[in-house]
Length: 230
Length: 399
Picture 1 (cartoon, helix red, strand yellow):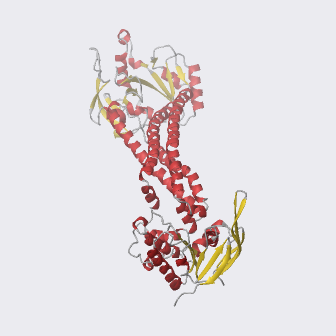
Picture 2 (cartoon, one colour; picture 1 turned 90 degrees about the horizontal axis):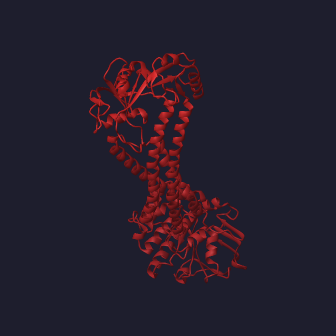
Picture 3 (tube, one colour; picture 1 turned 135 degrees about the vertical axis):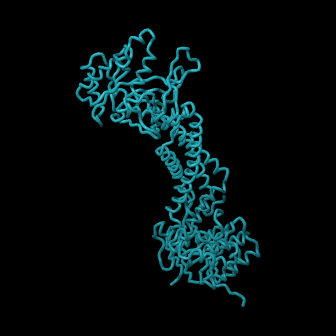
């Protein structure tokens, strides 16, 4: 069974009298443990696709199945529960809460889910894995961009999600830090068997995925594995 | 903790908002304490005059009644007891243009009267008067503080004015008891027995008639009691019977006095309400403004929380809690400042019987409850706005 299944997924927006076809009948299956990059020009529908998979948006038509569960018809709070339990998010601007320290930021999703058991220990382990085990009490403002994104990655994994969605996760850091973050995500993908779906403009990042989906005008232009040099 | 840190992140704005609540609740506490003081005073009047009938000379006549009228009044159906009474200024010549309380008075009466009225006095130190022992006085709590007297001390009554005439006479009394505070009239009274009252009464009579009046046979007024717990209507009916059956006296219907006191109480209730409205306007608007700013600044934070699984209810609670905490912090500080100021002013006014503030448990609950409710109420709209934000829009807002 596919981890994520999109069936004829469509999202249209109305802008005045014009209907914008942000996504137009996309069907995809993403298996457990895949590392998928989604690329395309601005306006191609990448972010809309990510928002639909992340259950942040409701489709105009079609279905989104997460772990076999059709999320399309769920009520808002049920979708929030499913997001909290099955989906992790990494954003370009990190979106860490400045009032919380590193450990508290990682533990934030636990506040809204029922799996609070050993939350602190799990958060500490994740921060160890992303190399920030010694910065538990630091505030986000005391960290570099790369470090903040590592915290965000740890936060995305705190509920053992089946998929982590990344929206330009390396868009706000320099090339060297970007490579480190990509390496970290790939390592977590291998070690933890977590599915990653990354939307990016950065082809250097995109080609490090196992599979690259190219969108154009809201449709899938290509969907193919990425060959890595041995 | 997160709420406090969020407030600390915008120190100036948070401080100004909390200051708005502080001012409002400070005003509510001080004005409320003044209103509570006056309401307690008036409440004492309602209790005392609502449980007895005041009988005096008919309108237009001097306030002197033959003491034999007591026996006549006791024959009226429904009357259980009647007592003579005499009242004198404790500080003659004291000029008070605006009074915030009941002036110090010497009240002469039968100690047994305390068993009949609804307004009971109890001694904090010493003992109550007896009807036989002369030269003794029991002081109310305020007058005892004012003259710094304790049991065993002596006090000259009435107090000699600075510009006393050569013929001024007063007497030395021994303080045998200090009353517990009642927050109403007895606090500023010096109680003596009837025999001593008649002695003072003789001295205040005009010289022309002083030696021709046997003060043991006259009284200034008579206080009449019905059955314990008698209603106002029953006491009014007794007053009517006294007026129709006993010649040469005027019994005032208790309901008229009680209504007069209640009308005075309504003014002070209006003052408190005005202070509360002031607090609502000043504090409430500042909380609404701060919380709307806070929500606007934290769109992405709200979007993130929704993305990681927060329900609408979670966010509603979080933002309401923040607004409520602002209310509680401002309310707590405003209340403490109000209590501090009223205590200081009461302390300063104690020497001149000018304690005009009374902080009651009811006022405490109202002030703090109002602050919390104000914060919560002011937080409803911003919290609702936060909770219903579209996560996609919130996440991609540029702050």
